[in-house]
Length: 375
Image 1: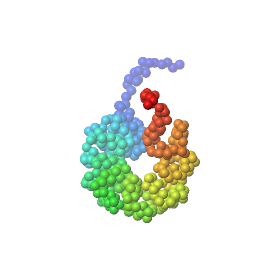
Image 2 (image 1 turned 45 degrees about the horizontal axis):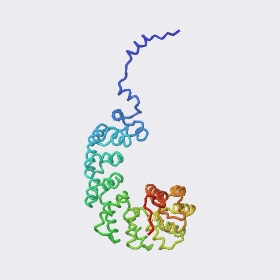
Image 3 (image 1 turned 60 degrees about the vertical axis):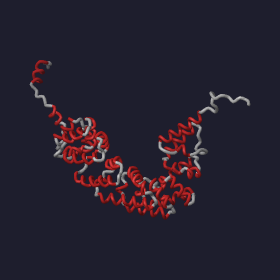
Image 4 (image 1 turned 90 degrees about the vertical axis):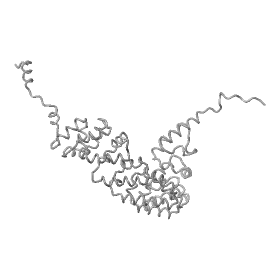
């Protein structure tokens, strides 16, 4: 019969070798991983399992500059948790040479000098900041060019963060597109004094417009002119389409216009007026347009209502049905009322809905108002 000898067990355990913390950590290393990288990431509280799952190849690379990158981010004002989040989302950052990151930091701070704001941008768009050193010259040249256009620094920063490809390529390519946009604006009657503001809005609303071929813009404007749009109307569309006019092509627009006119049964002039009020009609696929149109008709909305407020076609059938039911529950019938109350973003709808409720709950007379006496 075996007996439990506590003293003997204690003596054996006392002489057992206790693994150092770092060796116990290394025991969990996957085959071929860079031990120093894994250890450094552990110390920074980075989610190693997330890194292994999404971008495990990074942990196999050498050399890596984990501590140096973390130190640079800390020097810029990043807290420990923020550094951990950045490296978990974009672990490739540890493969960037510290000198390259320092150059990148100087470039970005030339348009975004606020360190806290810059760290916030890096946290959201780490891949845009930790980019290849081979792009630094292009980035610098593109920054200088866009600054020469007197564009707002926030617009340039937004472009750098959300559309880094625009800055990675040679400045000449961006210059061609900007000049094409400026030329189109002038030829369509745009005022020179307003061109900078117009260009700024267009770039900030469609961050990828610079990456589109300039020829596409020219072809689309020629097509729309052939459809009967005046010069002033073309300028309106170029502004309201927020640069998406560069993503269209004559064939897709021709199909959309044909389906729209056949479905609505309106004249070409009426269709142009609808498009001017709702430019989105130009780039909706035929199937999307048909589905949304049929959904509105099945809800009892008339053709004339849609022609009057075509922007309601910007809403998905699900959103339209949800809003119609909410309005119906409060006694509002969209079949006889204006469709304006359906329009807009969620915030716009809630404001319109609130005003509608207020109007219906308002008393018919003011109980504190003095009664008029007999004359």
